[in-house]
Length: 328
Image 1: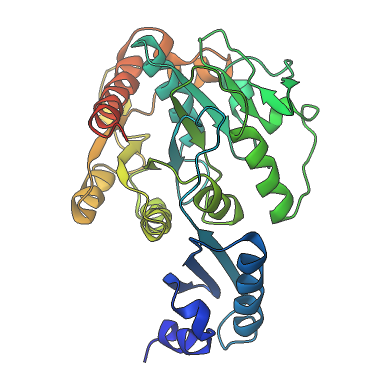
Image 2: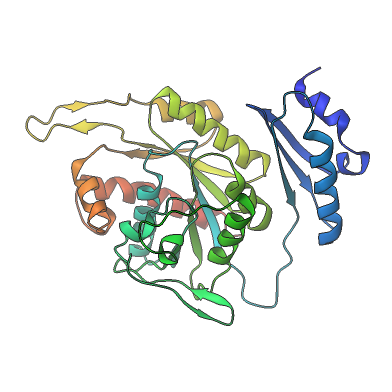
């Protein structure tokens, strides 16, 4: 009998009937339930009962519960389709990819916006050069901040003073994410959500309240990044979110003097992982000094020309093709 099977035996029968998935890894039990037809009180009672039952189970140090239900469409305009950009760990260039995909899509005439869901380490205001701007509000909804690249964006970096640390527990971060996504996005049709690294409360809030249309997984080629990327992918799969594909970042460095290409982080690991998982490989982004310099200056490379810009645009074209073939 597996550890997951032992946990299932402890779950109350009424909750067990609605259990969609259960995973135990590194002491963290992650459970996803079908909450369709339940009111908020019933959902809360089920969640409390499950947490109380499992928190003392052997091998469990933390219990994470997500309640999934088909969102009822309100009378107000629908939210844009959400594409989550995720990774298993930090430092793989996920935020840079998000900003440049949005810019590349906007250059093709698509109406796209960005939510910076990395509540504790927001990067989009720096990448899009609007750190000093603040969002307005109307009818209890935030109005996204424009950018020179033509992509509206909302981030915690627009709501707190630059450099200020945010020390919030999970529920507060989840509520903040809700306000950023449930904003007045106007005519935006696709919302790229730059998720924090890992598989924590922000990701679960996303799955529970704003199920994405699809997800893109970003990794560097080395084995450690790929292990964490696989965990991020598994969480989306548990939440029944389609994996659009994987992107390999920092995929090769061309010497500016001799032109020789080296691979300090390895080569081809993400493409191999995508093939093993049976998902699309969307492309490679090179380890290029120009990308770093332009990003630090708030000038997304995808807004310009060159090899780096074309690499981002190639991935964006594949994302655009996926969006067109999945119009729902």
